[in-house]
Image (cartoon, rainbow, N blue to C red; front, side):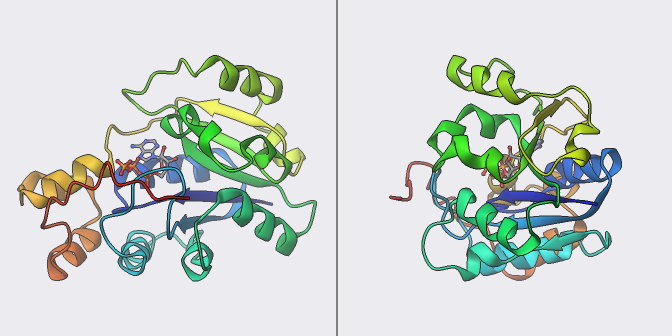
Length: 223
Ligand code: ATP
């Protein structure tokens, strides 16, 4: 059976994440889907809340689905969170034949060329890309050419080999972003609660998270 991997900042985890993760479970024969919160993202702005709180919110969000697991390796590792390092570690642990399928939204693909050794990702995993509402499906030319070399249209290809394929789907994603959720939480707007699991919303309130609108969008990590 295959293992799904879902890396992200999860600042905080929201229903958009959970929706595509559930879709992946529905479409693929996965024994588990590991959510992997990053510690220090290498290619985007720094998270607003601590890795520890983001992982705690993930634990709450996934507690009702036994195949969802929170994998804390990037938080426990010292230094920046490079996906390629995480994939190499997991591949080493699971051996060469286990299909690994890395889930990502189409917005992340637009800038995948800023990820460390991005072209080597497929040496370790398949990519399962979900078109995100409101995000252009026209990828930069060099990224599109790379995708076309590895893209498959049959989902079963992802089960039959351990790595190396890209599958793109427009399966039922929700138009929710953590950026929007943070803004609504900061303004204490009540309608934000429908964008998050109740348990995560309660955790945010109990711990006074996201109350300041520290605009860290321009503070990039230096890795
Ligand atoms: P932010 O708004 O802070 O950039 P985000 O909502 O994009 O956050 P991340 O934790 O950065 O959430 O995303 C982790 C992964 O989940 C990325 O691959 C991203 O594309 C994907 N993702 C997040 N939200 C959605 C969504 N609503 N639909 C599809 N994919 C999503």
